[in-house]
Length: 279
Image 1: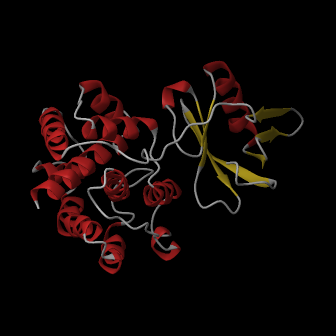
Image 2 (image 1 turned 180 degrees about the horizontal axis):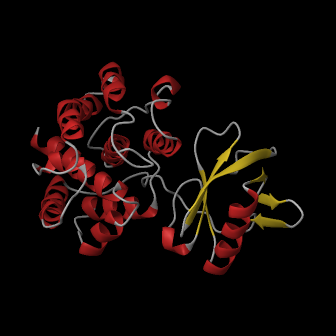
């Protein structure tokens, strides 16, 4: 947020129990205002419960406002100003150097796959765990194109990666479609492998003509994945894998993210790391 120095009008896209999604003019991603229940994440301003309730009532009533340097203004005859100039900031990028060993990662992945395998999974992403769930069409498309996308990332084959993105972006149900969540998980996993010096991973860019095939939240996930930025629950999950310290709560908290977003990300991360160390 510190890079945006001007005044930008925004529209309220949606108001939920724990998060308000805003669309800011000329910004390539979502801007979110969240309660403590939503957790920390990139492009999110976190509020305490009482202030979030007040903001969400303004957002539901007025539906538009302005983002200014270190502040947000919403309202008409009555106005609400949020400021975060002196607020705490967090890094959602991978650590610059992750100290790990392949055996730690393999053991953590095996542990999480066991726990995840015990869950009832309704998403089509379950096909990557050899489970049958979700719509048949989505399962077939994921199984046909996602493994190739992962292979392209590992080989730094940008052309093939974008070809697979053309097939997958926007595929699935939800505000962030299933395939977008899978691509996000794959991109972030590769950033963490790179930080652990286990993979040479050059930064990637997904063109707008591909991102226009999905929802705004889906495009936001793709943008964050390319940058290696992840919500705290995803970051904690990945670090527990690389540190060789899996724990059930990390998986549970991740799987509670969205309707199926967190679960899809978990499936993607475990699929990517399994394939990386198997190959």
